[in-house]
Length: 438
Image (tube, rainbow, N blue to C red; front, side, top):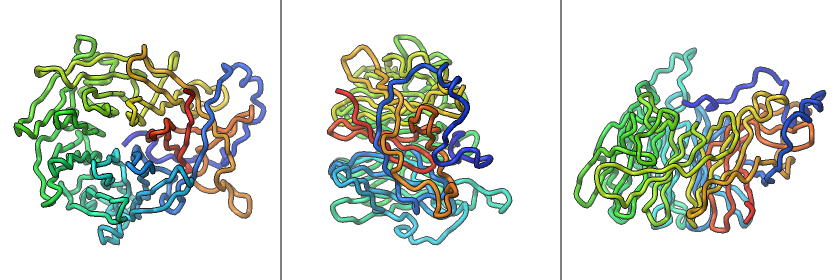
């Protein structure tokens, strides 16, 4: 799993609102930032025990957001957020729907999938394992496997499908309701990774295994012809055409050349890669986690090579970047929540400064809209009744100039039809709403 999956605190040197004192001189040496204000909403605290979640967020056809949580050793939940009323509620308790009381590593600890929406408006998501505790003698085999789930906002009902591969969690589920199927990618959390590209029959609840792609954190996308794409370790791309029942292994190019090592698109050891597709299904957007570059592929091109091109830099001048949060919005805009390392090192070397980046097709390249500040820093409680910092609440910090911002990488991104961009912050698990400039 990625390095920030379970934020730890070495001491309470950082409280909920850290006022870093004695660093005014250091602050003056930092570049002056034009902050992009965000409104913060606390995700129900009973749904997480380590203040975390993953890239599990999507906008439903009803305009509401559906967010997955992580509760290690206990069981994950699906949350619905209504932007109109600003209210959140739990709509799916995964353990209740499965009918399990499993705890520890056997629990369905996370909803880690890139949530997706079917043509019917139903929300597709799935469960995944947490982490075995060595001091409890927990083993990889203790986890039974992840469950695909489909939540219907109109009825409030959830359908649970069987485990596709024993002991594997599920990292991706993408529906094609017109054909009565959904595509699944499993996640074993082993080295080398097992990542089975599978077809789920939505009526029968049966599976067909197409290929073990061995790619970590794989997203599955479906193009305008109904063809499904899944990354393969080493840079190839699997494409399955349900019309011909043909599975291909495509090569890729970037600007007419094989991907470079620096692009992180074809590493033999793998690299997390964000994928999402344009509303017309003809362009696949690609953002490797650590590359600080946005790419696109032309899905209308013939042949067995997928032609890609570089669209430009996400955060100009950044020393390091981390992006695990990218989406294509309903109007075709590409949105990303990107964290920049090193920008505020003189204040706190641990700050990953959150930027919101947007790309509009037809424009010269991505635009960094700016680093994100929180304009309502009292959005939730950070201390108990005795004034002591609450556990797992140290990811929101107050800088010497009074700005409140996030400290860790953001792990999800979604856009609503009004252009608002949402991302997920850690410890405490928080939904950030940005009204981007027009």
